[in-house]
Image: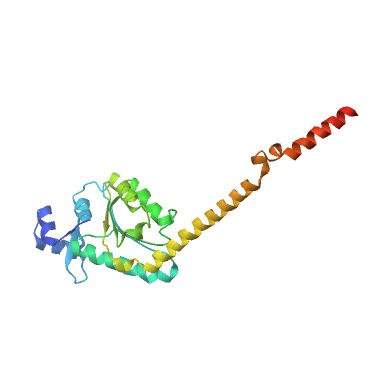
Length: 222
């Protein structure tokens, strides 16, 4: 939603700013207030007052993520940075989503719920401080997905909200996973190499063949 000054709201409604002030005092059309106590109005208020449908209203959302509980303060920093940005742009946030979980984890609950809302055409814009706050790898794919539903992701590129230690931890996690897989693959290869049945083992052993023939001759003699 976009913020409107009283003058703009008055022009759209065909009334004077003085009338809006009276309506505000009487509770007919209450104005919002900025931190400096200035009045402003929203598109939602305009639509509601004029009796227009609000069904097509789409949300502006801030999304912030950290990897573990020790970084909770970073969540506040991310949301604070986003709020400063949108306030300067005259944009109102409809929701702020904070989540603790690895950027490598595609099963994050709130992140998936946000994507579901995108695909339900409920989200207009998603604000994040850095790409890896949304997802560690594959950001461009998810950005294209959002564009398919006319949802824009605004990346503020605040490097300070993307801790380098978090990236190191994620990389170590990846190395650990692949090391385990390589170790398992080596064990599997060794097992195959030692399994004679998979190589025709006894069939190719000439001594085994000779022993089998001898046993057959003995059986005939009996």
